[in-house]
Length: 515
Ligand code: KIV
Ligand code: ZN
Image (cartoon, rainbow, N blue to C red; front, side):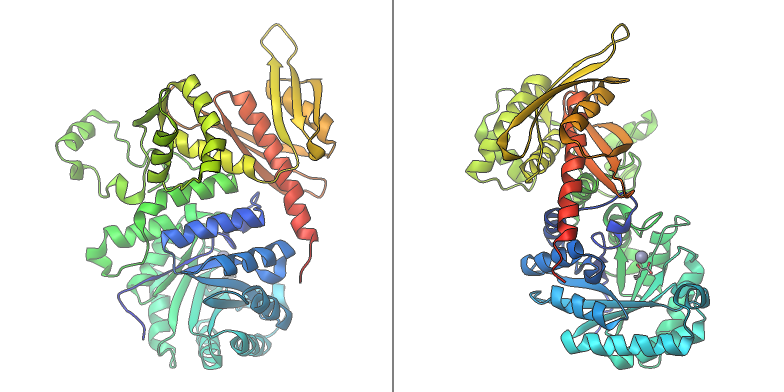
């Protein structure tokens, strides 16, 4: 039975989100995100596209074994070998779903697929039937649905439902839809697909015109009961509908939509920051729900009214979405028990060994900053996660000489594989350039630094600086790295080494073919 009051949340951060230009995660990082998505309470985690790469296959396999309270899905084209790899990767999932798709618009059928509608229909039906031999739960997507002839779209949906699809997804693949018009399309589908029965109508909206969330919500008003999206609105080009905005739209305006989701909203903030960290995409300050300014009031009139009654200028409570403020929580004199307890409040359950590893970094930071906030602690944990990942290279020490009267020079010492330490010096156009050149001399893998940005974790001059770096290899593939430290030159060195380690790891995973 379709529960008309519930909207199913389908998260595709690890599939469509990973298609964001410049993204690239290791299998372990995808697993960490999947476990957090499970905690957040999403109904379905699209863990990847099994046939697309060995790394995706392994990630789906790992996530299928570890995630127990969400459906795990793999994407598959309507080709037999894709369906087979998806089924194999999902073998150990408690609740597996195969999501198969094919283009259905004239423009895609003619120019991309070079097939006529009858062939597309036949391929779609065959694929759904094949997927059904492996799993009960099959989703079908006619790609570029919003530019597809409506009669053909309805025929395709009816045929794939007959073949066994229990969810039919309407992708606005190129972000072409307009809310009112998209809502009408969903309404027509809900009325005109003759065999819809208990099948769920899903929507998957891209954000090329900035309308992905509006289109999805309009679809919910018109009968869609599954919405697909990504944390922080990641995804191809301008991204997908942002899960946090979709969910808080439905929650905050329950009076209007009259539906609920299974999302634990207080996990939204931690999930957003984890995804931002591991993908290496900093959040814009004014991003709805999760941006640093989302709950800051600066105008005097607003502040005055807000202090009298929060609801004058706030439609959501920041705590409801797991927002972390800048209130001081720990200091120089805090001990291990205090740190453990605060980290527990933030959702990090550290065992004794992990606490021993994190504590020295906390002490150094507390000495530098004196006052530590939750945001500092989250950054510290992200840095711990990065450095405990089995990288090939690790920063041992960084020293720089710079200023307007000397040529910038860096001395960098790196721990290299086999536990040895190598130290070199290099000059550069600035301190960061000199540091990266020194690292290049040790690592000897040709890469280009293509992007560099620094963000302050908190306000104030003593803030931790979080550096995001992107590098490209000789094939033009892009990898990101992050590092945080009170000294931004050290953060830069950490971020550069993190990007190189991730490049090596992702390349290795891609060459360890298991399919
Ligand atoms: O945007 C799209 O059409 C997709 C499909 C594979 C669902 O991502
Ligand atoms: Zn998409």
